[in-house]
Length: 162
Image 1 (tube, rainbow, N blue to C red):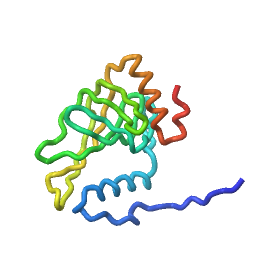
Image 2: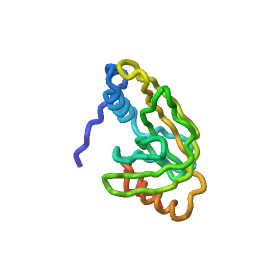
Image 3: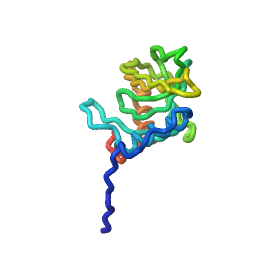
């Protein structure tokens, strides 16, 4: 069986992008996450899974990219304004436009958030990372969530879901 050589990559080898373009910064941050590896080993009740770039979370205030998800919650990122920072999120819809799948009315609570201001031409824009914990999930939503994770996970370990 042929073997593949694995190169060691140091994130410090990458220089930061110009700060004038928020899209370039988002691409850089995504590359940084890929180079740093998948979700770090953490002590959690349920494993977290990286998801396809087509997976979004929406509510009445935001449209966010889902970074990873578990049976208990997820982490996301979005662009927000310094004039209108992200507020408490209590309900979201998960969707994948490519596959045409969604889970509506997922109740949740925000457990963590952090902002990074983008300097340059868009001085009133921030990248906000936040984590949500699902709450009061119905049996039907739990089944939909399990299937959603299976259909949208990037990791091979998604086969371990029941």
